[in-house]
Length: 353
Image (tube, rainbow, N blue to C red):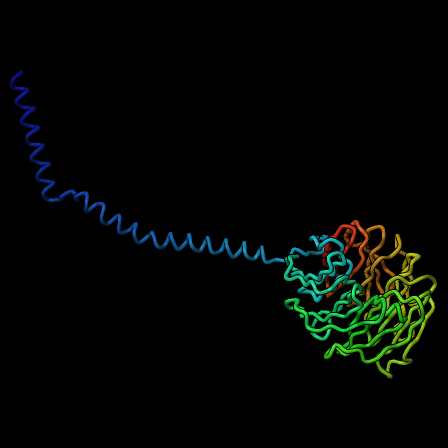
């Protein structure tokens, strides 16, 4: 037994000696040597990883920013935002939309893409109509019988002018501002550069609304539509055309003039010869507001809370319904906006081409 034990001990001794000798020829790296190179490779990887993280965060922010910057106004969807307490008039240039609130007497500009307020002006007592032209925003203040010129970019008051009694509507052609006076039954003319009255045109009784387009100013009166030519090349200065029922709104483009009648009918008049009717379109209720699109078609709002688009050949298509009667409509390109004093909302959508 002792001999076996001594033999095993001798073999173990020789194995240890052999391991020591092998270790001397191929030393095992110390822990610091092991950690050093690995940390170096890791350290070189950290900037790469950090860069990837930064890129990912940046892309995410850009995507989020792009999403946030997209317009909330899209085709076939009716977007809304609170527009005060009793909004009665709206006008737009596409980028900005302006709303007159007859309740507190304010005019507010909204970013159309965001439907968020940009500025509010409090200089009017009871603003009832708006028009864009000659670089600024024109406000008809029925509460004080005044015409106000506001800077469209920030809303500050530029100029004021006294109007005739009972002003009803306003439109701009070039450097001329036109105001419909219900008290005097006149169409009053103002120089947009000085905000001073320069003349007036006598009208038939019962004027209700006005618009401009195609070289004319159009006025709705008692059972007739009045065309006022802006220059002698456009024909007779003032021409009255009878219509089948009381007109409640008129909208014009160079391609056509649309008149909404109390009966619910829309008629498309030839601008050059308004005695000639080119199309008749029936709506589902009494019209409350009307606007013309650039392609010559029109959009009408009704007491039923509907919006209907009518083409120059009489074709009809329904648009997203606001569900409430709109007091005013306006358009710019594919953008369509409207306001309702019932809901106190501003409505906006894109009209499909």
